[in-house]
Image (tube, rainbow, N blue to C red; front, side, top):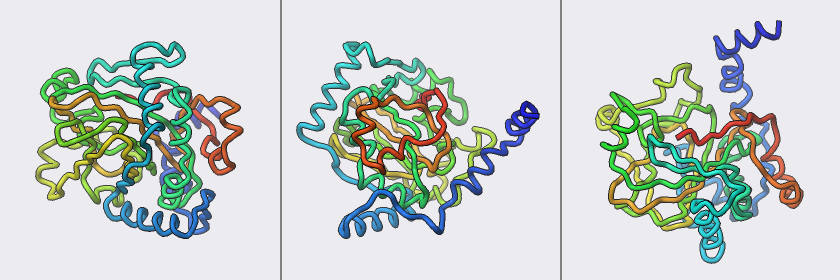
Length: 299
């Protein structure tokens, strides 16, 4: 019987359907666990309103000075191969390099992942108890789209994060930090404002989440390019149409992205027990739930 249920679930997507339509829907009885003061509550309310309208909240510079320099130095050590505890993997199609076990890299990453205000914004937007589902630390080299399309064997639409797409994890919010300066010359995060509305159900086929350059040019929505100095944070609903726009004029771009969901699509995250015990109760709840041992970076 169990085997039959598993086969039915795979064929019909029953679990995903229940999660998308029932278990992750905004709850009318939602109560935040990340408590904010009066000023922060007003700021979070404005951020949520902005996200409901456009899909994103540009949170400004959230990490700077010595905090930022410590994190940048730890990443440089890992990318240089001087951190044997951190696995370094480069995707040959995209040239993007990912760091494994990212929460082991430096305590600042755990501090960013559990940032009280940003997590408060996320849970108030989703109106559900949230978990940290995945973490992606990546280094993006300069590259033009012609080279990328050749490497990725792109036809009409592309299947990398550098092509127009929606994420396929259901209700999800990401918090991305630029860890290097990103200007008009650099590879940047780009999205189509408002295209998240009504799109939170995971498609049965990946093709339903991908879009061509021609489609975007004719859709009538102007892409929003995200620029900012190192330490800039963006909070966004991953169901809007977006991409990493690659540019050959770019410097090497470093970033970290935290994935938050109401409990679905959760990956195993490595965190030291002593670090976990020092977290607040609200932050510890981010690590709840059953998790699968696979990376969410993908590209």
